[in-house]
Length: 65
Image 1: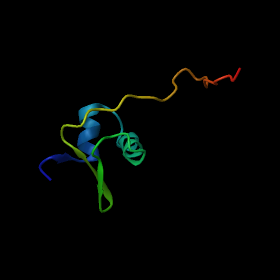
Image 2: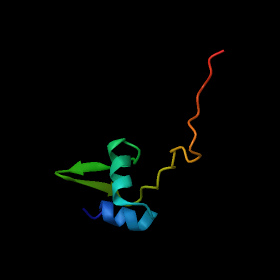
Image 3: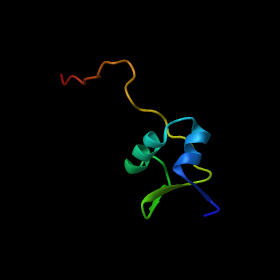
C-alpha cells in the first residue's frame, strides 16, 4: 500500500472532510479510488476533484423551449 493513502490522509492533504471524500469515492469522482475490505484507498498522486455542488442556494433549471 505504498502508492495509496487513506481517507484521513486525503482529508488532511485536500482540506475537506473524510465523509465528503467517502461520498466522492462512492460516486466514482476520484480516479483510481478502490475499496479494500471496509475501507477506501486513494492513489497517492490523485488530484482533488472539482466541487460541483451548487453553492448559491438556488437550483439551476434548464428550460426546454
